[in-house]
Amino acid sequence: MPYPLLLQIFNRIGQRVLVGPELGRNKDWLALTQNYTTSLLQGTNTVRAKYPPALRWLAKYLERDVKMVYKQRQRGAALLSPVLKARLAAKTEKPTDTHHDAIEWLINEYHRTGRKVTAEEIAQDQLGLTMAAIHNTAATVLSTLYDLIDHPASLEDIRREARQAMDQHSGINRAALQSLHHLDSFMTESLRMHAMPEVTVQRLALVPKTFHDGFHVAAGTQVMFANRQLNHDPDVYPEPERFEAKRFYDPDLNKHHFASVTDESINFGSGFHACPGRFFAQDVIKLLLASLLVRYDFKYPEQGQKRPADMADNLVVYPNVTVPLLVKELAL
Image 1 (cartoon, helix red, strand yellow):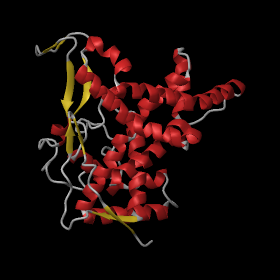
Image 2: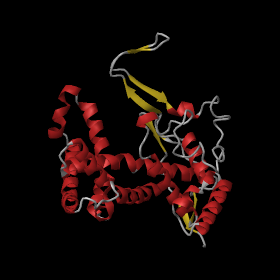
Image 3: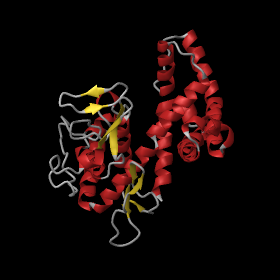
Image 4: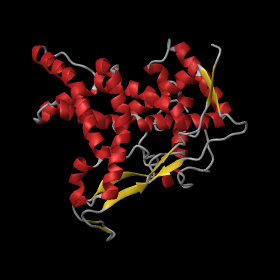
């Protein structure tokens, strides 16, 4: 099954950006960050199923799943502590010495807002970022791979485009990624057809609001938009149930690209609170797919097999992660 392998790959890439090379290569940290999301979701489901809101504070003392979340946070703080101490000491001795990772961003933000920088707080923030960055990205790559297998002509076009980009730009770099227009369009169409969030742009009304037409929203009302319905609306996309690989093909990238947030695309949210990591996710997905497609071929085990049906979990839809794929190395 490719999903566990994709998860490991994205975890390594994500941690290199979030915590830098030292922790990003630490096996204990990598194991922790990969397992944290599962523990958190299990703990959350346990609390919601067994405890009324007024008694949920008891769960961390009584429930094994919830205890595991706190244990993992403590372990994260212990692993991060020496790195954080070294960073803070270096900033004291040489304030201009900076690192390009999320530890540095968090330290600067804590200082800006007057919060105390502690390993416990930074570790919890890092684990939260990891939860948002890794699993969804790995699932998106798997979903795109399924669609590529189902559209072999597009796969060959993208493979040829990737090879040309690597030759022209001497490997995979930012310029090469920006030239992968066929891949970008295919990824965007795959995401349109199989968007993971059923709803997006979730908001909570903090004060009552009455609109000019008399429509009233009471304080405490949750508001959200039907994301998948928009993606399949014929008034927005002609023949929305047909997979069109070049629907978003735009060599100039003036409007449509994978991380776009427009009136027609709210997969990543909208407005000020749109996903801040969407451009990072876009580049990492393109980087991995381009690298994989020029080196390997993929197919289902059974002749004539097509994309497996997606799996729904509450308001999230994931590709089926249990289906095995056959992988063959290509002659370069």
